[in-house]
Length: 399
Image 1 (cartoon, helix red, strand yellow):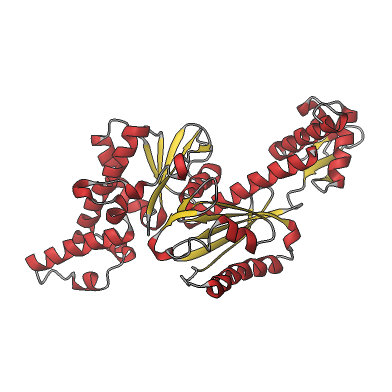
Image 2 (cartoon, one colour):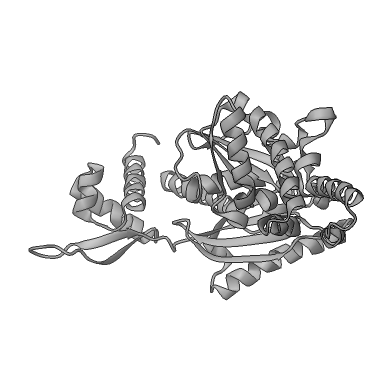
């Protein structure tokens, strides 16, 4: 009951935990000074936290005089969390301690689209087996995993955890990847979130937008397109979780933004431009680029100074800038972080985009590239799992 001695004791324990997480190892006297709690209160709370394995005695402080005090440290290995990024082409899995430090990171081929109950069960079994192997090789078991955060390239309905839509390569897996389905396959708490939202959270917590206290946008361009928007450290989700679904934005001539800016859209633009160049000059030497064209080869050609590739990506940058202008007019963000398989090519895209922003935008946000790269989503998934775990640990102490 609120106000009871046990309730107050547990509040004190949570206060001590927060101080240790923020500051690191401290003596009981240091904890008393920092939290304002009396030394007997701190000592009693510490003993109970040691019993719960949430803090450890780690050695002696380096006192100048007198008896050296015992240091108390938050036990980041009391439990673990995982983040899983189910992408259009790859699955990425990260194992983290309670400090959010990623201890193990692995990638696997993405799930294949299969239909029927048996096929779906087999697909989930493969995903679960990846996790079982990861834990076994790190001498861990499922009792030590408190939460798994999943990121998927689709719209997750906040109330139900169902998937309303998903990128084309994963169509057919909506039911399989729902919160209910994943919760049934994993013996711990599961959180399901849009992948770009998680990428934004990952960049905020440990990447390019670390501790940005205002408003920033993570704009992902790859197999699909989307944005994660954070204000004062909080994700915006909006009605039905649809905030940031830029794929549905209409550009000139009614084209969906995703159809134009996605990897497939970039390839269509490039092939049109290269076909036109070949008609004008059949001896231009770009037949090989046209025949074996991929986004990676196009960016490589631009980096090597290939004229047609440079011109294609300048035109492509103009289309990205058109989308960014709409975002800036509505939100006026302080920062835009580009990410995704296409957006991550900042060395090629950012010079063009920054010039357009400088010349044409009424609000001129800082424009940078993701620091986390392909780990952005899985880092955000670890963060949501960690936040939920710490909240649960605090609530458990109050029960």
